[in-house]
Image (cartoon, rainbow, N blue to C red):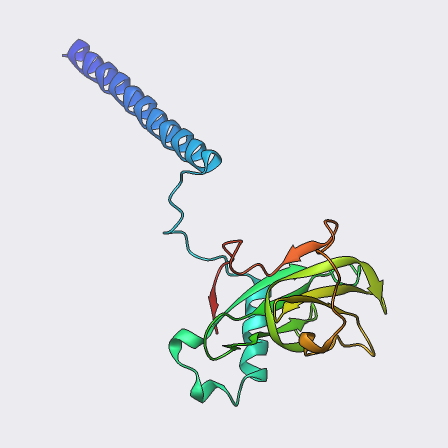
Length: 198
């Protein structure tokens, strides 16, 4: 009887070891498949939930304050934003460029948006612009100069008195193309930026 029990225990032990090995192999196969699809660009990311972080919450709270009087008129489809982060003044803290792409905030001249400081305070509100925005390598008042597209032309915006001009369409027109050294930000149409509600 002892021999039968020992044989039974040995069989169970071997069986459980095989199951562990099989489960390790399954996990290994899933990880390899996921990595290959992600690196190859064939992974289906449509089910992935948007990244929610401190910056998103900061922006969301500020929009609820600055758009308080607009909220009653906004539909559910109007209440979303896009953002991009960039250190505009080399303080090693990102500022946030916030844009919209719906009929409430956009018209024939372009769209509206905001530039927020890293603590959420409004540096600027801007109107009549098309995205993306370009950050140049030159600076004024310790903030990088920006290039906005408005009315089919590129316009240079320089910081003056702690603010950028709010209407790009009346600013200096940039002759020629945007410099290759400029960094493209808030590229709503070109870069699959995530859409956040507020």
